[in-house]
Structure formats: C-alpha cells, structure tokens
Length: 374
Image (cartoon, rainbow, N blue to C red; front, side, top):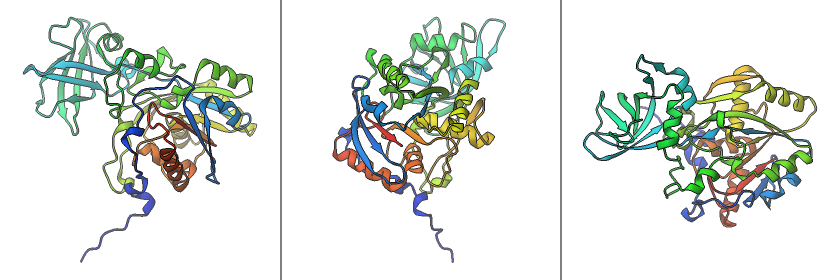
C-alpha cells in the first residue's frame, strides 16, 4: 500500500496563486515616472501608497541602487514555412554570446547552435531548414532544426552573413520587439523606446525581455537620486524568455530554473563591498539585478567581479546574502518572480499587498506600477 507524499504548503504552486482581473494587466505604458508605487516594509508587512517620483524620499538613507543595464533586442523574426504558411522564430539565447561562439566559414557564413521558439513548429521535422524573414531576403537567417523539443522550443543551427556581428544587425533590421505574451497587441514604434530602460547600454544588447522595474526611471530621477547621496551601480543579466515560462509542477522544488547570463564588473563589486562596509543598504532595481547579485554570492560566497551563468531559484526559505531591498513591478500569479518577492518580504505580506493593489486598481506586470520593498 502506498501513500501520497505530503508537500509543505510553501512548496506548492497553489500557495502563490492570487486572483487578478484581466483588466488590471497593463497593455500600454504611462509616461516614465508617473506610475504608482506601493511601499512594503520587510518584517512588519506595513504598506503605504505613493507615486514613483517620490522614490528619493522613500529609500533608506544612503542606499546603493544596483540596476540591470541589459538592452532588449528585437529577437522575434517573421518568416514562412516551406509549405508557404507564416512562421515566427524567437531567438532565446543572448545574441552577443551566440556571435562570440559562432564558427565563421570560408565564405563568410557564421554558424551557431542554440535553442529557439518556432511558432508553429509542431509539424517541422528534424533536418528541415527555414529561412527568415522570407526566402527572397538577401540577408536572411537560415534555421535548421537539429532536435525537437517541447512547447515550441527546438535546438537549431543558425546561419547568417555579415560576420559575427551580423546576427545583431539582422535582428535590428528584421526582428520585432518581444513584448510579453500578456500584452495582447502588436509592438508599436513607441514600444521601441518605452520597453527599454534609459540606462540600457548598446554594448549590452542581449535580452529577450526588459528588466521592467527600471522602466520607471527618468533622467531627472537619476539626477535627484545622485543629489540626495544615493549610490548607483550596474550589473548585466540578459533576460531570457524563460522568465515568462510557467511553473508546470505542483511541487515547486521540482521546478528547473532557466539559465541566464550575468556580469558584475569590478566597479560594481567594489561599490557593493564599500557600501556593505559602511552599513549602507543594497537595493536591487528589479528581480534580475537581485538574481544577479544573489547568484554570484551563491556561486562565490560573496560579491566579486563575475561573468557566467546563473540558474538560481529564489523562493521562501532562501537566505539573502547581498540584497536588503527591492524595487520591482507586480508579478504573475504562480510565477518564480512572485516566489522571489515572497522570499524577501514574506509570503503573507506580499499576497496581502497584491490583494490591496488589485482593490486599489494598480496596474500589473511589465508596463504596470511599481513596488518598493525596504
């Protein structure tokens, strides 16, 4: 006779569910800096309601803000199947890394193996090649399937012209901005600006989604923070499509976190070490900055210059080594990002704050309002 193994409540997917009316999902951005800001206190769970432009008055004194400077690339490329039907290729891996790893043939063709999403890709066979965006395009991208996967994800061999930097140039010319799937409209010219942070660096272009907590910052806000004595440092995490992948297991301990590429430059490592020595709090601007810092600390035992991969899964029970507070948006029910926030501020306090935000008609997700956990 067998008996079911009991899963602790905090490890069940249902523990991270909340009801969200669809109309609370922001479909368009408000002007930068004009979003609302819910402040949640770690420990007490107390909360208050503000506007984002009040942030300098709400941060802990002397805090060092650490932000993700990765830039979003237009990695969704339209094309046609051999049968003539429409198709889309979504490049998943950070493009700068693909370009660095590419093999360059004598004819100048670059080739690299990676994973992509092909939609629709169910009926595509191993060995089949699709040219994007169209068969007649002179600077097309050839995608050859080498292994089929689940949920539209396939391992492929990419081939492009123009040298190692040619893939980025191709995507800039032919790709579409990868707005999240819950934004139910095509991207517009306005999204090309608003779905990037003002501090996203051109030499750090490699994300498949924006580090959205940073979308609220304006040049004026950055100047106000500097005048008030708040520090600013940057890391890089190339956001992968996996950030939107649902958790598909009831026991979240069985969830396999997606890998993302991270970098911490020496100047940032020094700034964090100095802030720590002076007792100044570290505030991560976004879950991606938080995962970068905590991923490095878990790998190396502390903060130091780093470049490599992290698949850290932060959920309740996690011991934070670096981050004291977080600026973030409101996250999807049952998502790993909601679990991360719950680990920092407490599950009940976070879910209570989310219910309050729903009732007060806050705007949710990427183009939505913000939360400061301090």
